Image 1: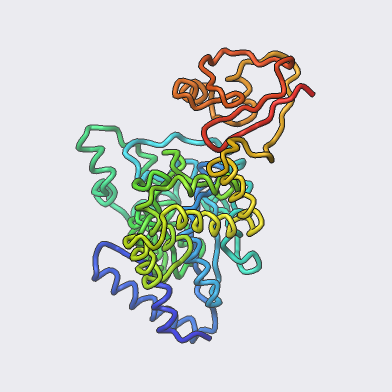
Image 2 (image 1 turned 45 degrees about the vertical axis):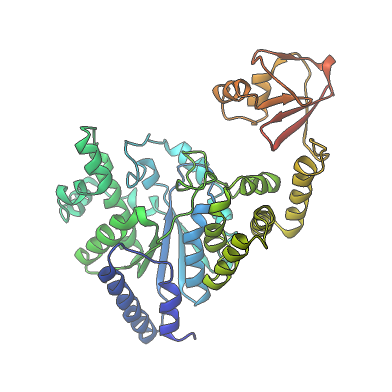
Length: 411
């Protein structure tokens, strides 16, 4: 078994709390809990929750998954928790306005592939997958009152996002306060030793979870709060589906490759660090090579793209994605050979085709792209969203942006 002090060093790496005293307390408690668990002859119970507000996880989610994997590699009991009940409300932690509420049907559909996506990082054989509607859906109103009595309204309203909304005289709905309460009860229901999360979960894990566990006679969990967030493809703002700057784990290899290639040069280092796990020494050597000019930014970025696609798909898929990229952006071909096909059997507006083939998320997005010359037919910009494409005009290649292609045929 790995020595406890070595485990502590690795498991606390990357954790940050905004307060050195809290960090030292969590480090000390983790060491003590590891010693206790060893004496009791059991692994630590560790989890992280992921709310299926959307159907796909993205690269940003893998930071906490990699921390869970470290616990797995040391032999601890790891749970990948799908927030099938908490997602009905939606976490308000990093939001400046109320979230839309989802239906159970939407949540179930979104959650369908979450575990499979997680197994890109986690060990399938060593991962416990649970859903928090197991225990949250069974609570009655008396249970909620009893749990809520452990907190004051002030504790919730002093949180940064709520404080800003109060100052701006924006509404804070009562159900939003329940989110932290419910996440805290997740820790109680699982008798968790450790919960992993991002900076936006600091209150929910460190305050709500620990306080409820103590109130229920349990040892309070250790909070492992990851200090850095992965920026999105814009290179600045935290990766987020709602902002459209994310790289989905379910993205096709060529699309994932292209999205990585769109990352600004200045953000490459943090992707190497957080997604590929490069050491400080390796990162320093990379930065020195870029600064001196011995490394070309484009080659460094292509290596990053290849390695990320290899992790989430395969080395073969990465090679094919690289070839497609080279064909489009280096070889002058403009249009790759291996693009999907779709049949057009009757005259159809280009906007409707784009929607039907999932090349855009909505008619509004299609019209915006057309206005920006982002849609091409046989490499000629489409200028009219009402333009008809007829079977007689085919075959033809329809293109959206730089990476989405489809070959339209009449059969």
